[in-house]
Length: 116
Image 1: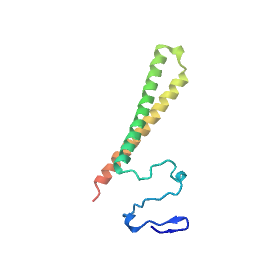
Image 2: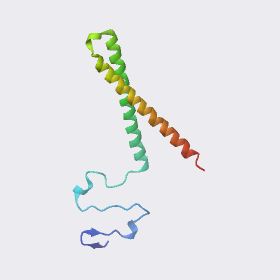
Image 3: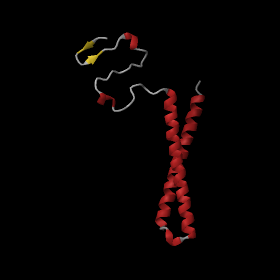
Image 4: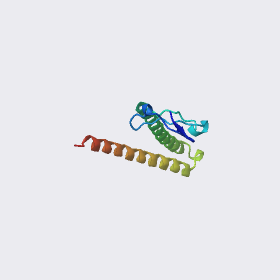
């Protein structure tokens, strides 16, 4: 391995395509991240878990809005009307956004599968 000043050059045996391992000279340069790039399998697992958490949050907002609506009907003095409306609008907006994303994903998949 050759080195010139502060820069360390990698030998040609370490270069594979467009993936080049980086050599850090200080621990603080890595920011606590793993030194190896994530594999496609781990990236898809991370995307799946983030997507699942987002759907759980949307579902939680729907349940909260439903519970507040039922509470307002059964015990009108226990909950403010504006709290119910805010929860219902949050749930509606998040569900609309999720539906838009799902439609976009389906449309993108169809366009990619129809490429010739």
